[in-house]
Length: 180
Length: 180
DNA sequence: TGAACGCAGACTAATACAGTCGGCGTTTGC
DNA sequence: GCAAACGCCGACTGTATTAGTCTGCGTTCA
Ligand code: FES
Ligand code: FES
Image (cartoon, rainbow over all chains, first blue to last red; front, side):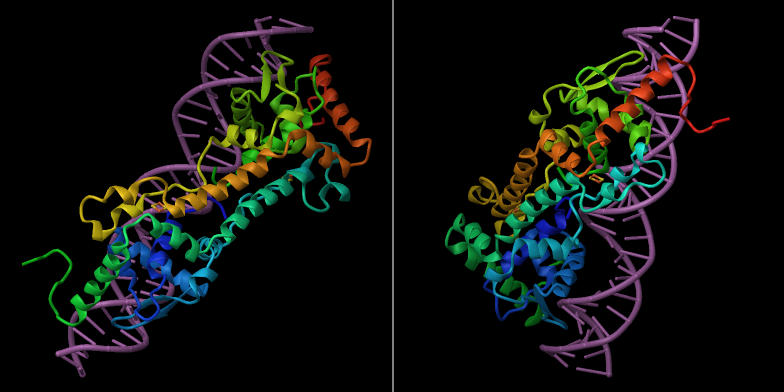
């Protein structure tokens, strides 16, 4: 896990909108437009969340994504690992074994176990991962919504419903540009 | 601070050899050969440590580097920041302000303060930095040497002394290959 | 004076990240 | 049955970063 990427920011922001949405799948395109980010890019992120068992996908028209488990059992660490893959914070090149006083072959004691320096990095990585694991979509979502006026969540839900029904029930409202 | 790089591994490994070396500057070239890494590359790392006040440089022939302060007051965090510059673990793109229900201008409450998601990332970064700050060259160097046989530190010091005097007092012993 | 130093900057190759595009299989509404 | 709205996959582009090299300059010391 090196450098938490923009994909994670997009992903978590999307997932927060899915909290509490148990029976209406939302498409990645709608989530993208809701947040003003690239639909193509978001479309690359969600399959990873699906493979990790964080969201469930339903295919076909009016398909989309739902959370696969309750929001209080989805941690930030789950999402980060799902999107970025488990890349280490630090990858050791084993320089300790190349010390010139060893000659060609380093003695066993020099390369046994984990290098003391590497150990510190692993400890730092663990501290970071523990922090991420301690935060769930539910807890952060609650904190996220506390700043917004009470009507905001309804506004967003309404926007999503408009989006879906606007396309599927009437053929109109192309929602792209090209108004004429 | 994103992804702790190879430069940091090289840098800290070098600095550990400087612990306890108070009056004999060691050149970056010697440190490079001692550890079997690229001299040119190491030569790019040390000026950063010097600018950060971690090592002191002495120029001219038989010059080199010394620790600028006691090893128990040089933390891993100091070294990482000196070498990599303070790059954030996560850089927020402020997607929260682009929500479609806001229209063109996001309301003040939406962009005030730190995004709840961003806050978690900052917290995780702080946990990592705190861990790095808690470890010093002295503590890790001690742990590092505990694995080695007692004669090892002397062997290394001898190797360095040979390196210096071999070049400067006699012109011989090129220490490269080309033995004949 | 020249070799051994530190220091700065230009340069390269490889990799990763953000973002796009086109094609394919599935489902639904008409 | 067809087309549109979905998810999913792989190939592709441009830019930034990383590891590593090379050249040149100023300083010190034998
Ligand atoms: S050998 Fe990789 S950190 Fe020490
Ligand atoms: S806007 Fe960047 S993390 Fe929420």
